[in-house]
Length: 285
Picture 1 (cartoon, rainbow, N blue to C red):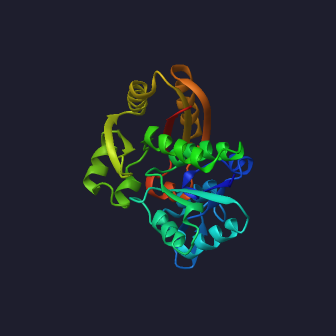
Picture 2 (cartoon, rainbow, N blue to C red):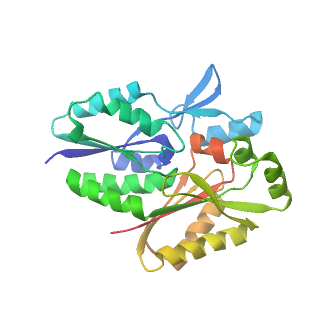
């Protein structure tokens, strides 16, 4: 039986200890402050360093995906080991060229049946929560077919909501207009964002006040997952107190199989800004 190796990218925001424990391979995206100031997300720039940097310098960097050549090198190194299959799960293709770069790299290999490149159609720990489950299966010695079948169900059963603290970053990244951002800030509107089935960001709802926004998210999730055993992940951009509060409330109201708190890394953080919290939920088996 082929050994399954799970690959993802840094936008999955998986805690370092889980990456190590589950032997997950992570390829970093890039964070670009200037032509001569480029960092690898989570490698040469930690999330803590990133948020400190944007606070002090008051500038929002751009981001870029790994190159097809970087993916090709990584895949080739993994596939040198006999009887190995790669399942490579990445940031939504609607947000980044990462998935496309991985697909271009795949074309360089004859052994297509050994290399599965997946568009998660998600971001942050909504990718991570899926990757972790597949990596656990790989570690247990499950077959490629079993892992891919579970992956399909996870892709169908995973939901994420982002609670954004400030509209500034969405405005500067072109997600909303300047007038909407100013009005939202004045009215203390907290936009709840989610992702479409195609992996595009959309405004789920606009709520006045953080408590109301959180209650609305939990109410919506109860309708969807209230009768199931679930895995929960809360990722945050320097907002650990709110992340813990969310996890406590979820633990009280849901049948929880596992829970994780993690940092939103620099790439996703560049688009949503500090203070953001994302709640990811998926069905456990």
